[in-house]
Image (cartoon, rainbow, N blue to C red):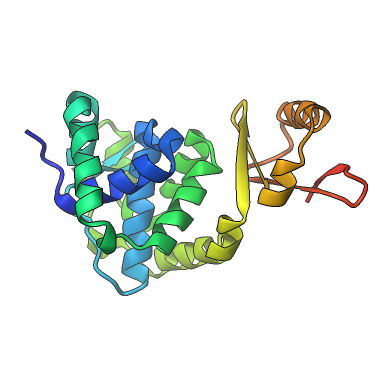
Length: 218
């Protein structure tokens, strides 16, 4: 028996179908769900922060976490069902923005980002002291949180996402246009692998091919 509600199952199903690599990470799934609910709230649309708990790695929807980690086979089955039954209820634009966000940052970067939200930091001392299952309150989601969401929405416009490809190499996430991605050669791929070793580059890393086919860091 699963405890996740139909909304969370449908959203998880969208991620499973469209970004399987992020769905395969419990943390990235949680961040996707958290950002989707934050984006929905700021847009003045239906949202759901029920059963949101404060963990050291950030906000966690505890029922989803329990289902995902303890009943994964049933969870995998149910997210597919829920998404196909409620596909109309998932905002494609919002889901794509949130998936792009979690798909272009490392798990540690995502945790750090969610720590900036007052809905988590308002309970920071209790969480970091080791208190278990600290409930997070929607009332702590303030204007600064809304400002972070607006910045994220502006940083990842839907048209850009549709025309972009993500290449993950050793914890670095490179973004380039679909057209440029199709033109990559083995030499370009070697260059990307070398760039992944550069500690001064921070995710996401935007790349482009110039007229001569040279790979440039944007």
